[in-house]
Length: 208
Image 1 (tube, one colour):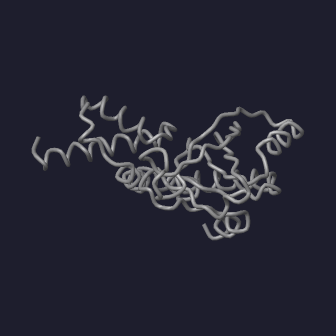
Image 2: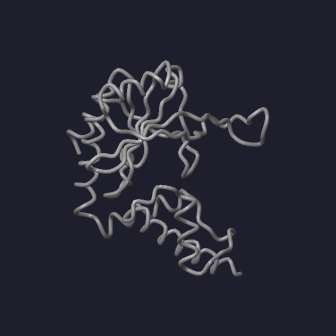
């Protein structure tokens, strides 16, 4: 396959994956790109776009097709995140992900990091507040240092509590208190993921 043709196919897949992530509520880059490739009749992994390429196409998609609606939806998601963060203030909540970086669409999930001595504290808080939730786990990449037991980056699996709200899904990942000093990595390009606390989010919303 000629390089020029490969680049064109990669862009087509990236654009289709971006559309699905922006409009259909898909949050998994790997799933989106594979589904997009299948829809376009392409199965070669060598021509699949990177997560960063898809993220850039998401930004372009919103600029072209959702220039009026997306900023309003984003503000709603950020305000909803702020309410949740204020509720969980004792756990030093930080917003991260697409709702923070501005690529979130109407059905995007909101990602909030909590920092506690144990996940049990958060679970008991949810139970005492009568907040329905589902429990799961998620693996985060924390640094670029090679792991001692595998050729992967250093990763940490943490408990996740999923809340269903009127404005979509909110995922609360519970880290150790000391993990606040360690940046998680973005799945799109491996760069340090930005995190924002309550005061910073309030300031962002006020100028948005």
